Image: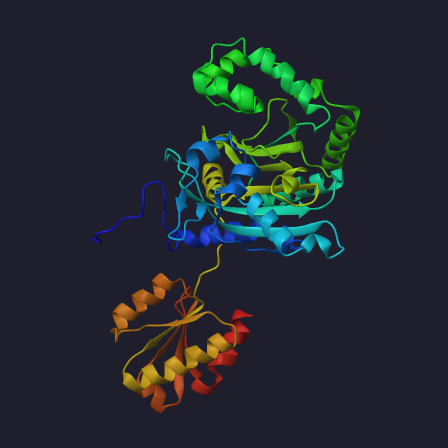
Length: 420
């Protein structure tokens, strides 16, 4: 037993389950790559102020959940708790917005970190795939991203998820709503921390998951009743475009999500099979974030989908992903000369693009064939001294059990033909 264990609230991805996570990441990324989104990768840590300004000083993420630390050089850094602020920072730093082709469309995948109470579906280290369209104010972009996420989930076989949709208004109409909401909230029986939040960002109170708070929110003013004409028209076009694409959604006037930078369109993907941690992903428009972190006005929209939560959703629906075996051909050498010959053949097979492996460590026939079975390989190559003297190797079909002698110099071509 090892002396060390994974830190509390984290997990290791190990075979064979890790293949499921890779398949989910690939399925989420595939529609993005087909829609003009280029891959971006950012550091695992950033300046604390990037998240304090962008995500919001009053959010739980910044006040309670962010892993912040000071370096030996005195820099204040934080492990990234989300991806949007980092991606926008990188795009601004590289002047991607000045290349003359807006929006800048980017996708990313990686690990994120929040100090939360660990439970199923909520970890301190978690994996997401995200997408951002930077530099254009267009309801078609909002609709595109929602449709692409829906496409990704359905390509995995998920069916029981729901899309919640709302508009948070903009700098013209939200202040009026904010004042009305504050008046309502100040009349409630709230704890000191929540009252402080009412003064800083009252929309955060609507996102409070505690039953004692939610019960008091009945009758709270709704933002949709305060939207200006421009925001109403924008939101209606998003709804129409999604509907025309055949994507079902539910209007949720209380949906605000947990980040301060959202404006206008906000959405969430939920799966009722996950219990209290029902959100599998979400996103929205963040037209003012660039200016918050010192950049020019760049209206943008994006989302992040949780890989961990998506895997749990697949399990809740009983969906088994079709994951090909990691190995197609497994070589079983019997003796030193056979080991040299089959090692060379395995190398040739790999160069030809076939997944091949070898029984290492001088295993006997019985143990080596068990290893071949465990590998999931369709074919086994078996050779001993007598086979090599005749210039052949034995090709065994692991499904049918049929074994055929094949000339050693023809085995690569034979397997290419059989495996297509």
